[in-house]
Length: 152
Image (cartoon, rainbow, N blue to C red; front, side, top):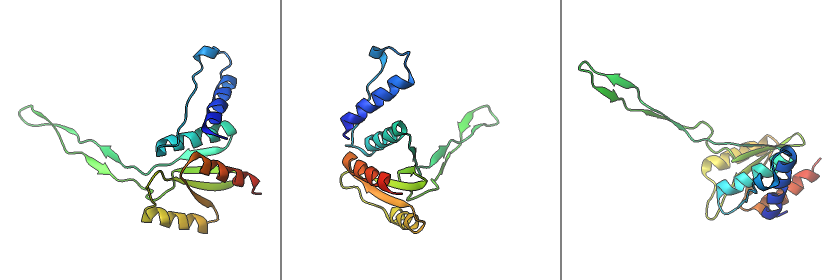
């Protein structure tokens, strides 16, 4: 299966899900594996259309803005905000559950390499009996997906 095949699969799925939408109004989503976000979107869409549970994970933190304070002469000031760090450093990009097994997928594009936290997470996942795969292209993912399907 190629990314063009995925575009057609998504289009057919959308037509079945929304039969009352006119054909000309049903968009065709194109997919790419040139960026990590593009490949993540393609994999997530494929899993959703195929009926496989897939969750994108993230460990980015969040900014909590400061409070507005009014001083004694009526001036409003915004106090300094705080940055709350993420909690799951090293966690894989996608968690896919298929046939009762958990598969973690880490997406690496170009010269991107695993961090030490990601290597630690990979070893923990493998000790727990799940799989952890590094995917660099759509073809890599689809080959791994076929192997997962063949497992008992």
